[in-house]
Every structure is written in C-alpha cells, then in structure tokens.
Image (tube, rainbow, N blue to C red; front, side, top):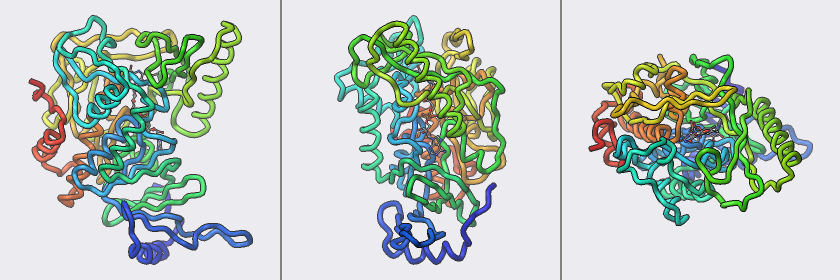
Length: 431
Ligand SMILES: Cc1cc2nc3c(=O)[nH]c(=O)nc-3n(C[C@H](O)[C@H](O)[C@H](O)COP(=O)(O)OP(=O)(O)OC[C@H]3O[C@@H](n4cnc5c(N)ncnc54)[C@H](O)[C@@H]3O)c2cc1C
C-alpha cells in the first residue's frame, strides 16, 4: 500500500469546507487550487468526491458495474483513464461481444445485453438466432456499432446518476475507517475520492496491485492485437477482426502488455508500425485503424476462490454462482489459436468469491482479471461473461454499502434476487 502524501487533518478541513456545496456524486471543487504564475502549487486536490461505490476502469465490465450500482441506489463514480466507455469493445475495437447464448438458450442478459441490444437496434443491425446452436461459436457473437455503444453507455450512466471522470487513474489507495481514500490524477486534475466500496474493472486489476494484494501473471502473455482495415469501404462502427467480420483485419502484437503507460506505448508503436509496413507492401489504402492495441491478458487476481479449467470444462455449478459463462477455451500463442469447444450441454458458472481478492475487505473485481487459472481465463475473459461479472459486482458493492458490510458478507439470496430484478440471468435460471 502506498503512503498518503496529504495530511489527514488537512484533507478533512478541505473536505468539510467543500461538503456544503456538494453537487452530483458529492463533488466539491477547491476554488483556490488552480495553479497560478509565481505561486506554489497547493497540496490539496482540485476535486473531492464522497461516494458509495468507486468503479475504476470504464470498459466492458466496469460500465455495467457502475450502471448497476447506481440503479440499486449507490452514489457511484467511474474513473476511466481513456476518453470513452467500453474499453476493449470500443477503444480496442473488439466490437463483437459473445457469448450471450449456449446450447439454444440465452444465458447472459441484464444491463450488458440491454446496451448491446439497443446499440444493434439503433444501428439497424441484426441478431444471431440464439435458439439455434451454431456450427462455429463465433457465428453467435453480436456485431455491434462501437461508436453507438460508447455513447449509449454514457447516456445510461448519466440516466442512472453515475458520475464519469475520464483521463484519470488512481495513484494512491489508502484504507480508512469507512472504506477507502483513493487519490487519482489526470492532466490538470488531482481528485480525492472517499468511498465505501471499490470495484476494480481495469482489466489487469490495477487497484488490487496498488494495494499489494496478490496477482498472477504469466511470463509470456498472449499477444494483443491491433485492429485495422485496408482498402475495402469502411463500415463505420461495426466490428472488425477475422474470422468474424468481412473486411476487418488484425495483427498480433507479441509481448503486448497493458500494465503501464510505457508498455502500452510500446505496443501501440509496434502495432502502428506494422500497419504502415502492410500499407506500403500491399499498396492499399488504410481505411480504419483503432486508436489503441487491444490486450488479451495481463494480471489476474488471487480470489477467495479460483476457477480452474477443470471447473470450467465440467460446467461446475459453484454454490455462490452469480453468472454464467460460455466460450471455448481460447488461448492465443505465437502461432495462433485453436479454440477448444466445451462438451455438449456444458455451462460454466462464475462464483462471487472469484470476484473478491483473497483476505480483502471492501474491494471486488470484474472482467478479465477474475480469479482463474490461465486456461479457464482464456475463456472467461470474453465480453458477455465480463458484463455478467460487472453486473454481479455492481449489485454486491451497492448492497454491501446499504447493509454496511463487506461483499463477502452480503447474503447471496439478496444478491441473486436483486440481479434477477435487474434482468440478469442466474445460473440454472436460463429455462
Ligand atoms: C484482439 C482481441 C479479440 C477478442 N475477441 C473477442 C471476441 O471475439 N468476443 C468477445 O466477447 N471477447 C473477445 N475478446 C476479449 C474481450 O474483448 C476482453 O477480454 C474484455 O473486453 C475485457 O473486459 P474488461 O472489462 O475486463 O477490460 P476492458 O474492456 O479492457 O476495460 C478495462 C478498462 O479499464 C481502463 N483502465 C485500465 N487501467 C486503468 C486505470 N489504472 N485507471 C483507470 N482506468 C483504467 C481501460 O482504459 C479500459 O477502459 C478479445 C480480446 C482481444 C484483445
């Protein structure tokens, strides 16, 4: 855990002054904190928030977690280091979420599905027929318009009362009597957040890392990908990436590492340089290029339980299961990928305890950093389960605040009933 650079008394004084003018999400602004010429920069943050739930990372899982926590009544703030919501789906361009169905039935719904459905409908797109078992798993991925998805996600956050902070990330997290103090930075902004619960949806469990809680990582991670399109007319917003889409292409960025700004910079430089080489070699026009490399793998948490590939392959029904997951085991290597389909009828589940870092209080994760071994993770990381986990974490965090307890202590029945009320499909409820 890192130390706090501000004295507690100093912050409380600032906070007490600010609370009188509290706006949305408990936001207060320090009127005198803008740096002025010839004046030393003040030590107090520019903005302070007092919220119930802080979601860090506004990607696939985080967007859903934040909307869900707010819909249950928690005062919620989402901090996203990039410029829009959606993460790998939008900024990374992997705009073909799956899998919402298994063996002829829909198995994941709720807020993620609401966003996917509305973005397809608004775009005049079409849906796969979930009542049919496809020959290849990717036939039933949904092609969304990533631009619309990002905007709809913002609209739903705002409607639910989620406060959004872009271009920021936490640099210090300190435990307090009520929960957490999280100091974030962005350009021109230093934000202090006091919150009761954190949901870490950064993909690589960055907040869990700041807290020095254990994380797992392979020495050689799966490649990332840069998504682009040469020559053929662009189909704005629609997904790219063979073998799923007609014109989109992607190339592997080996060694791509999402864990810090230096490694992400390096991945982007390599990705773009390779695209330039292709344009020159193939003498074709560049019609589309994502702004960022998308990353398949970095850190996973060590949770209160860990999903093994045997649990996954056998469709183990965990006693604390909070959502379904369905996808082949799908490990990419230097030489490509050979998806390993699940045995017919198998439907894996995700337990709540895989979203809770071991021996932690008041912090959960959702998304690809779920506590799982590598092979189980290669399947669990896809978007529909990430959304399902996000919704479960959002409900649990909000209920933990309402009941003044920790995520592990929230009664499972309450979590499940609230999830059902908000449209989620619970394991073995799929009909
Ligand atoms: C090339 C590729 C192809 C794929 N193909 C498919 C597919 O066909 N179908 C499918 O369903 N899935 C696919 N996946 C997997 C899936 O897209 C991802 O695993 C999933 O979207 C991850 O969701 P997440 O919420 O965990 O992370 P993300 O969606 O990546 O969201 C993490 C968010 O956190 C933000 N963030 C990170 N660190 C910080 C920080 N410190 N502070 C603030 N914000 C932070 C990021 O900017 C990002 O917005 C693919 C992935 C890749 C890379």
